[in-house]
Image (cartoon, rainbow, N blue to C red; front, side):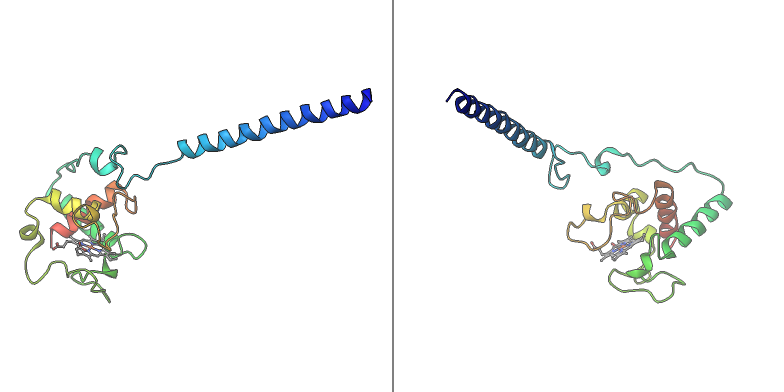
Length: 161
Ligand code: HEC
């Protein structure tokens, strides 16, 4: 009798401890869910790089260094594993372009005429979703598809067209 009482007591204590452990885990899991990452899109409390990063004008060099930047930008834009702009845009001298986006430049309007402010062109390439949330154009800067340096060179190239 005494023994079985002790065993019963033991079981109760074990169950109690187990129960506490399980409850603790559930609480931890719930806490974890609460602390989980909140999606940045549509969440005003999460600041996106687009809002925090200021556009920095590349250090102006002489004409020959600008020509070099433009040529580097063209290579990045044409590179299928980098900008891959040709997947969607016709660009002068580009092989087998896609036509999901408009030709750049479009119908003889220079890119400087189309984007008098370089910043506006930069914004389009950095995060096209800012201008059109439904665009299929990848946000090259925001998603770090291109580095800042690569993006600036691509913008220099596009702006020269
Ligand atoms: C998956 C397809 C796709 C890729 C890749 C793409 N774009 Fe676009 N782009 C578009 C579409 C579609 C538009 C039309 C505007 C829109 O969707 O809001 C556009 C618009 C633009 C515009 C604005 C044109 C205008 O006159 O308003 C520029 C500039 C541009 N893209 C540059 C680039 C550059 C530079 C690259 C490569 C780094 C690139 N795009 C890669 C699809 C693409």
